[in-house]
Image 1 (cartoon, helix red, strand yellow):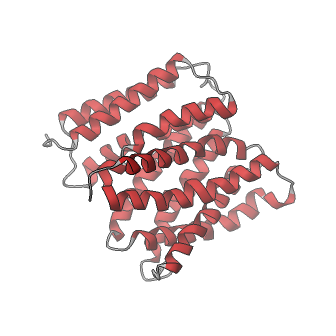
Image 2 (tube, one colour; image 1 turned 90 degrees about the vertical axis):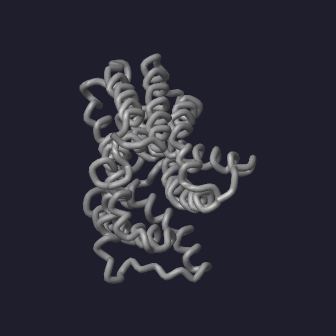
Length: 295
């Protein structure tokens, strides 16, 4: 690993912008597509750059090896379920709320790591961070201008989607001895296998003519935030390490809120800003507490 240079911070910012851009594009995609179709298009187009990389680097994709059940399970929990839940939720709430709700992933992962790993237990600083971060989310749910009885469940489903990412990350530890390209390519293949029949059975999207902006957003979601962003993330990880790469957690909700306002003119209330600040502070304390002894 090397000390971060200007180009590394530039790439980190680009990665944050790409992932943040997913939320308003999901919103646009929902104008024409259902959540199952959006999830399918994301994994289908996202698989293209990843599998091409595996082909050119001569990396064997083991989707149907003896560990196929792990790939299938992780593909469902880490891709199928969250992609569906987020798309379903964003149809009824603003995309900037989704960006803030999804930013709780580092907080949820800290809670889960306490119970399922040996070396990442709670300490005082982590506990303070978790309490501050989730307090911000609770405060966000009190914003009656943006979350009411009509979309309350949708907001909860987005939170559930972020939790799926965390559970999928824990399951990935079961096959941590395999190359990242192989794992990602394999779980994308299984996500496609799972979603393809569901898409035709439940939503039958090819019987209608989608809006041009929805189609562009759906394709963009697959190729850029799902496929290319993973390759960029991998480059940052191998160059600067996990701690540096994890700083995207601060930037995604900020960029997601800004992009939602620019492209969709979404409302930014005082409670949204307070919640955004609380979540970022919570993530900061959780990461700072990672270097301290557990209690």
